[in-house]
Image 1: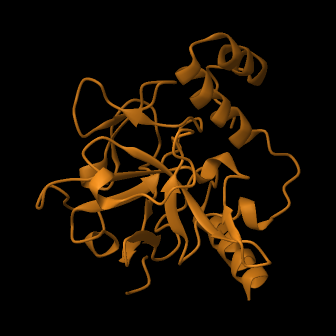
Image 2: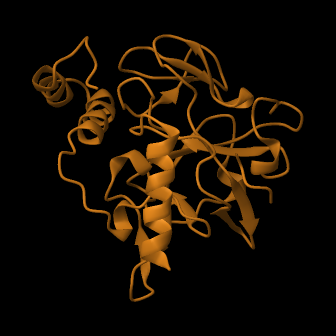
Length: 221
């Protein structure tokens, strides 16, 4: 495969945490993900915090199925949240959920619906596509849009994305699309084909993202 090429002004960190603790469970969880994603003054790169690495298996992130490999038959136009699962230093399975920004969303659309600017070479048969599930605006976890099947909407500030078109922004304040993750099939498993094609949240520049990739490769060498 070819080489694929802060704090939100509306809400203070204290108010954001209070909102996360005081609202419904769903909004609380996604808001807390945003808080954890930005409140990271001291970061030590460990294997559980590494971003999705080539060869990682996509497993369910939902509590009821967490750690189970995602099956193609479970995918649809509604997002399935996933964690990348790699290996610990001793070779045992390791879910990379030490950094909440690693949560992913996976979709399966009918043939022909996924179009540019999606990188079709980074999808599975032009039908299955994966992205970072972390909003590029304030770091919340993005959900299905309940008003438009097949689209995504962030519950924090109503940012909207179209996963059929490279997760481009179609509404609200996000500054850029969700980063696409190259995936492929390995037997019955969905696995990571390469690092994110674009810099994902919370990275602010491509240079920062490339530096992280270099650090990951160095540790795994």
